[in-house]
Length: 495
Image (tube, rainbow, N blue to C red; front, side, top):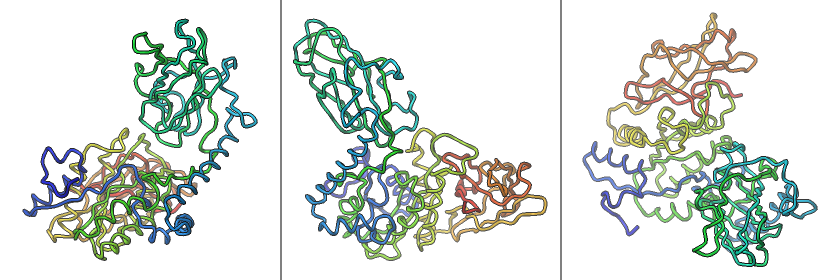
């Protein structure tokens, strides 16, 4: 980026909002210039930011790092190994894909009977059109009427945006393929296959995660014969059928060119910064590791220790943001993968000079990147001001410590006050608690503060054995301190 730049409206647009607002807060409170380095890549897992040497110590990564070492980290050999693994993985997918029979495509022919297939209006990602949460292979078919004057001519096929991989068939013959997300596809239908009247377009779409299908704008989905003739629209009703689900496959091999590949972002983005005498780190990550909480707990702590060693600063402050509330709101969700990841994050506070900023109250159900960056930055800044710069200000909320069960079935939950913390605000109607009995079935609980404790109960649970707070993807949590710092989610059980 051309070296250090003074922050201004011209230089800040592509900079991290949290980093800028955090630095501005420190500058205003300390009265000294503050320099910040934006070392970020959205949607990436923690293992991409950890050195290979440290990943060797984390369960689940030893074998992969050992393979890289055996190949001498040679780029050509790593790519050849990946391609071989990917070819084998795709072959396995083809074996279970219903769109194939005896290794040959069977859903592409123009005369195939697809009357039993479901219909979907395109463009639009399939999550909102009948396949919520689905990742895998979906086949699409559409009858296309070609004007008589276009027969025997090369035509331009514009099927829109396809996420992630596609194979295109025209009248049963493969004519093109593509890969990549959020990219318009443009292909040629060869003249020898173009006939007047009825033609059949079939598209095999493969996606391994995120939003999937054929999207974009309706006006961009068409077939053209040059620039003068009116295009034949492809928007509207398509037939579709599921080939196979990713749930039935092992995870796909990760491309060495991916920003999620283990150690790649450490090598490319962190290592070049090791010569800077940085004061500390603020970290805002975790969503790309949701679903792997058990692995994330030691991985995240290894990353923090790794960076401190790499920067030769064993006590380097490392302040991180806990995952915000996200997705559909559910009052009771004991199997929440987001809650489990938040718990794994919180364990890193056992490391000295490592502090967590709560974020469970300002997320958005429909946006993984909540807009209120100002409050996130403020919470990080007060931690730095108190922990690093010694200011006598409240910077953290109470942390769950223990609990006791009274004879009347009420649970008294006690908390530990961090050395830079403040007590929570009195609240007679706390939202966010659930409670379970010996049957391990959780119910929404009533809760209120009683001094420095919280009393939790439910008429539906006569013998309480477990209490959870904020344990859901997107919980409503109202236990906080006078300065607006939220108490972090916790659970008393280990189920």
